[in-house]
Image (cartoon, rainbow, N blue to C red; front, side, top):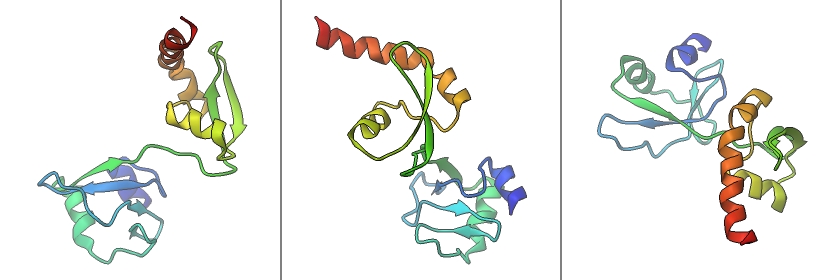
Length: 131
């Protein structure tokens, strides 16, 4: 299964939706690939090998879900000076505000890459507040 995940461009345990050839999203998502197989939203193994076959063949596509930190998990954020900082996600109002504006990242590298975009967002927010 790790090889199947690699071929599909996802990590083991990474959540994604299955998109049928009609463009409709499957009702059973999110899915994820484990070392033992494909599991659905309930964590039940999907015995339907057709889904994996159609994903590999290109008949179905997958759409990755945005990364969201879990309570207690480490995440990286960008402060107003453009420096990256590491915190534990507490699921409180401040962390949820960071998440809502797209300022939570799984790695330092991802946060550093987003510095220009986040600083631009900060400037847009400040325009409405400071003027």
